[in-house]
Image (cartoon, rainbow, N blue to C red):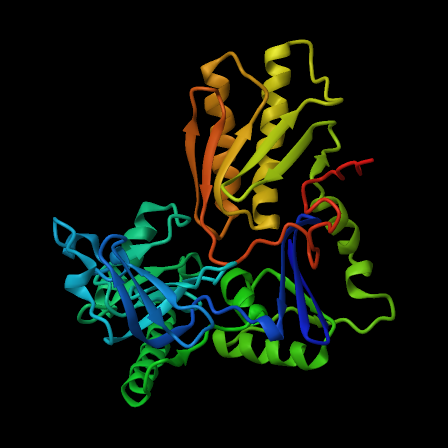
Length: 413
């Protein structure tokens, strides 16, 4: 059973996703710092850089947004030219265009934007110009994949593109059609606003944290949602009933005197789950170090003694660690390049088993995660896509004394 525990306080919303009693995901949104990922703007090109094959677009934020040439070409690979044109052939300074934010502004960098538009719904992602149908890889049955792909092809018109999500599995065509019609209307509203407004202008903002997570993560038939705000609980029930007619969602308004996160043991799990060194009950330890370029994860046996066979003990240690590392990646929302230093294994078969265990464990991850394979130094290389800033520690800031390095330099004298 999965539970979504939501704590609302002043300007903050904190969400904890519990799977089998353990913290699997944690997210925070401050109303004053609402994410712009997924938002659609009418922008104006202010600079075109052929050497970088990119342009900068004013969308009304503090920093101009970055638009790469690949995000200007047709979203369907088969419809792109065999030889990539110069960005200067596609865009000119002063040109107005509609763009969608795909990555948050970070540090001194502006947001990254694209013209490959996508509007996520409950059962599909609608792409008004993509011209293809795809089905979630998490739907494994060939017959069901073929049925859903056929429905997508039947429903779409013109150059519309559709990615059918896992929630559509075994659902009738009317369920999928209603979602498509809603998203079509949303896109029509966006294009109408673009026609009327001058750049830069906001045309569409994605849902807030609570509704977004309910749309993307919450199963209204199986999952339970506990929330300590009565207005938000009522709003959530209304949203779910509109999204999935005919259900009675499992939404509980928590009103006890004990704080919600304390009552559900989330405070304790946050303290241990975001530590640099994580010890599993079996005695295995995992150490996580983040740099600007990548994340390094080290696995140690610590107190785990396993059986009499050293090779099997190492294998079991690494298998335990692989499943836990997949959970850590989701919980910390780690993105980019990830290198895992498992305990050295002599047998190639064991390395295959560990990589397979990792691939199986990351199937629960909503973010696109890819196991690249083993390097020549027997390190497992992975990548994980993310659009928003990761949060190594909720509400935490780097230490003022050591600058986040983990140590304090001795004073001179």
